[in-house]
Length: 116
Length: 111
Image 1 (cartoon, rainbow over the protein chains, first blue to last red):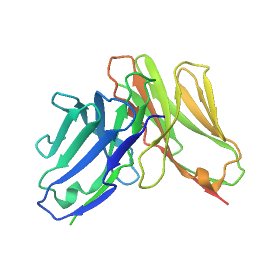
Image 2 (image 1 turned 90 degrees about the horizontal axis):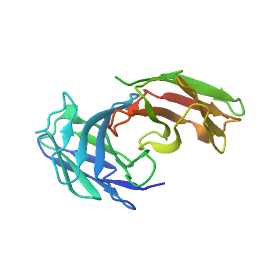
Image 3 (image 1 turned 180 degrees about the horizontal axis):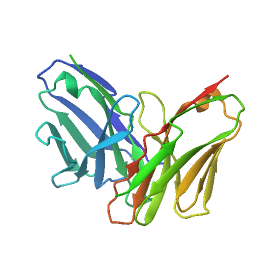
């Protein structure tokens, strides 16, 4: 299956700082990538849909100024958590769909963010 | 609005004890039903895609089946390494590529 690489796998940052998470599709071009947040023992919560070359589409209740998404190329999307606070601590996961293949999406390894 | 309900929420099995996980769905035109496996602290790993009722797919000890209302993930003679959370998702024919996920079934297989 297709490979999606997410980096870093974990990060600890101080409250008030910003953190950038990268999501790369390694063997296909992804015009659309998705960013999810997952709380312990909960399912995936879609935060936003990242579209290459255009603005991201955010789900209701997700602050677009806090969670900045950039999809500057067909293989890279980034999520920046700005002015992070302890309540932003969570597991963030990206996924991408290869438009040339079947419709399933492939996920990155996830990033565990801890804000102290 | 698409809906996905997975049951049971948690399942404990003895090694070798076969069982099934359920995924019930409501969707306006099914474009695909997906099963994923997620290990703690990791992103979901793709297992299967099913597109139409009656379709079945197998991979090692796992077999996924699909009807018009639900999907089953059958686990035959499970091993401890099959312990994980299994997620089900659906995509409808409404034009969006965004899948709707269930809450998952947490499976623990005891040796």
